[in-house]
Amino acid sequence: NAGVTQTPKFRVLKTGQSMTLLCAQDMNHEYMYWYRQDPGMGLRLIHYSVGEGTTAKGEVPDGYNVSRLKKQNFLLGLESAAPSQTSVYFCASSPLGDSYNEQFFGPGTRLTVL
Amino acid sequence: GQNIDQPTEMTATEGAIVQINCTYQTSGFNGLFWYQQHAGEAPTFLSYNVLDGLEEKGRFSSFLSRSKGYSYLLLKELQMKDSASYLCAVRDRNYQLIWGAGTKLIIKP
Image (cartoon, helix red, strand yellow):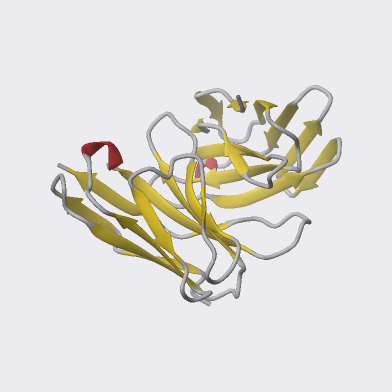
């Protein structure tokens, strides 16, 4: 099992450009998440999905869109990149259930917006 | 608002014991998690507490007091590979994880 994978690993954008980050998981998890991690701050939830075809806003959704057309994939789009979106982006997934269900993280995408 | 507090950085000696504290104020409580994150890598799960008390897992233990909004992660017999950031996260009433900024642990020989 590959677990959670993310592409690309690194990207440099100019202000105003758009891009899509891809997250894939092979653990048949229902829940998927997109976080950003900035120095001195905790992980912040951007958007999440509780199943195929569903998405919901997290703590910091502005400037991002997501889609979950297939259960195993969760895409994060930046419509018009801004320097404030320079960050490390992590995708995570977790199984269905209300018991402890840890989140499994991908390796991250390091994005710089100039 | 919701808040998770943990020390920014701690230093300890190889072979020693270190305790990393976490205090929280959240809208509801549905469990507390500790994750380890090595520099440049993804967070990985360490422990989960939902009831008061101590959970032991090898060299790592985690304690929870819900009435005090307090948890700690105890690391014994420290090894150089334990140098990492340790993230505390609380699952709130909406089952969303609220994350602390992490504690960077430096292990010295």
